[in-house]
Length: 508
Image (cartoon, rainbow, N blue to C red; front, side, top):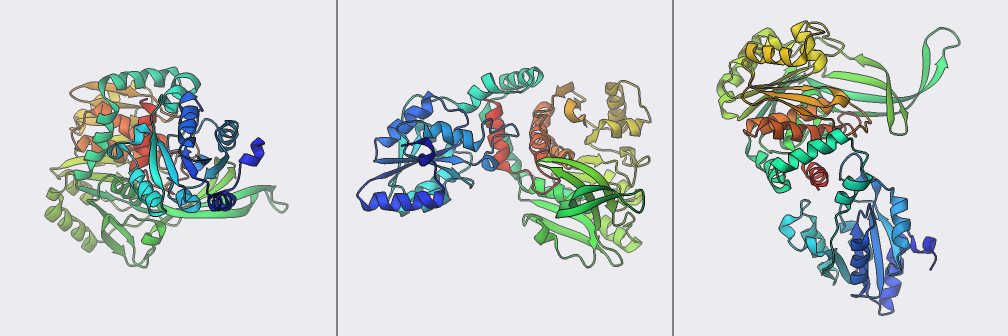
């Protein structure tokens, strides 16, 4: 059979499977990424074929390969062509879903073949293998395992095909010496016991995708055609969503517009308990970015704020203070994401500084607060997360050695930990007890940097509140940031399973 004849859409393969089964033939299904085809895959296919007559291989589509920002190395079309060239394979299709449930329902295989490494279901990070086995059994099929030579595509790609810098490879090697993969993955699961209070500005992000047309014929301004738009939650909403992916005990304390009822629709996690103060005369801040989109590359052209003065009145300030006095002691982590948009005033900053729990603070520079929004508005913090321009603004020092500024800030605010992100250069984390650690950027592939600092802050703060050492906390935050820069804005939160799969891939 010609290679192109082997490659079919899932709907067509469903009909082929029905026809073959009606003639008494047995259908065998294999499913996976198969990013680097190797002898282990070929033997897996051959062993699977022995269980039946027709072998179908479903290849995970590119958008659903949750193994990190640089995967897959080979496109779904190239992976399909390589598999179609194998004699034992009868048909190949693309699986446009996470996991195999939809493919199993469509093809109803007599046998669903997995490698022997999947035999211990408890070791499956995704937890999908049990569901897939149940679906196969429901349709009269059977889950079978092939027991042959096992290679890791991720390990082969990391060692021989990766574009990862030498700096990152050295860093990962050192990390693997200090932590096993199982230890790192378990540390992520253990975050679920934390009780977290997120405090910060409520922001709604809007992206308008435009195509520039040029200069106006009747002026000197730029004209663009609006092609599409996205709207999603930003600010403290986004941080709370990140946290809620790792622990279900999350409370968000913020202020929103009195007439805003769309937060569920925009994607606020059901796990987030809402303690909202309502502005009676204003709406929730909307940041609208006009963006030129060329494939996956984004160029921001212009940005507007709907407002920047959502200050609380005295009654609302009292509500905020009363809530902290009554409830703050019950949280393991109080995470303050202060975007400087008017929510957190000096009185509230002072009250937050009194909280005895583990306190993590991030103060962000933006166009509405540049020049005066600095972390020293707080009297203390156990953990401070800033980017380099933000810490230099805090110190009013453009030229001094960064490490000196970090140590001075740590002493000033009694902070045991300070993390400073540096974009493509990675980040530095400081621990008063252990000193400095440098973590390189884990990917150079960037779609959108908006929100990357928030995801780093959320994961690293969770880890430090759990009393993990600073190096591990910074690694977890860096992995989250590497995944986040592949996402447009805060359209999606960082999820536990993709994070764990990326870490597993990195550490192979």
